[in-house]
Length: 52
Image: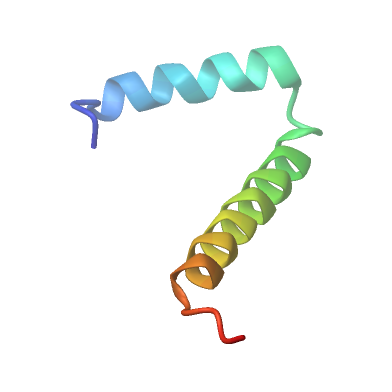
């Protein structure tokens, strides 16, 4: 995954916790999940042939 190993992922997680705090991480995860879901929906809708 992008050449990142376990130590690098732990470092990134630590930095996120320091910057945002533990209370905001669930909110960030929810927002990220919704963004990915909307992106997938938009890509899927665009692939469908449009009927006149």
